Amino acid sequence: MSAAPKTVIIGVTASIAAYKACEIVNLLRKDSFDVKVILTKDALEFVTPLTLQTLSGNKVLTDIFEPPDKWSPVHTSLADSASLILIAPATASVIGKLANGICDDLLTCVIYASKAPVLIAPAMNENMYNHKVVAANIAKLEKIGYSFVGPVKGRLACGCDAIGHIAPVPEIIKEVKKILK
Image (cartoon, rainbow, N blue to C red; front, side, top):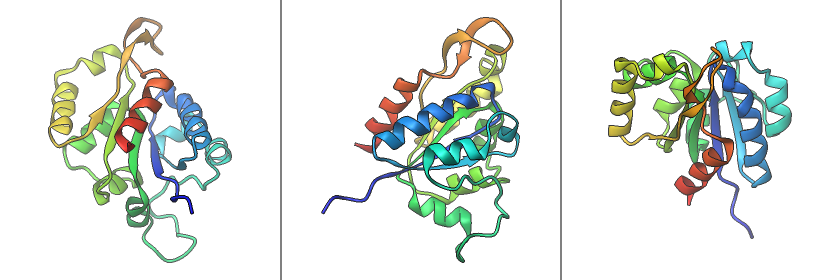
């Protein structure tokens, strides 16, 4: 009898790099992971639940107040199921929320309710990434055991080639597997 697949919860936040989440979900599912996706409200401007639901094979969640299919608070049941939580892409906003105890949406509630490791793949403008507050927030999260992959230098939405581009998908997948080994 084979072991149950490990569950990776992917939090997708409002970045143009959100389209990369589709490839990440697809590759993790091909590697036999159970993939569950949480889209933040603003991420809905970049990718659709239908796309990610089709790729993951699971219902995509966006709202902490959405009634569950069966009675179980959605944030705690998701948190309990997680082998790993990956935020890809992660905006300065969600990094700041996590570093400062702000728990006001489904993604942050699931992270705070879970004992699973957290892997963060930042994606944002170079000036935002290099801002002292963002750097301090990343340092805070690293200090409590959160892991980061990227960002890298690449073409940004603003048109420049600079640090802030989401890490390459194969690198993100490699980090997920390394943490779950």
